[in-house]
Image (cartoon, rainbow, N blue to C red):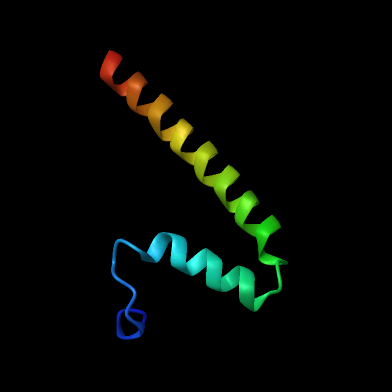
Length: 56
């Protein structure tokens, strides 16, 4: 497991994309950017829906 590699729970976020980037020789960067965009879009939709619920 990752923790067996000496990676702490807090450090996993920067560690994993870096390892993927290295393993794919940089090809994972475009995928990571699209994933980030998708997460931002989902988070904004959740925030908007929550605001509508608060107004009811």
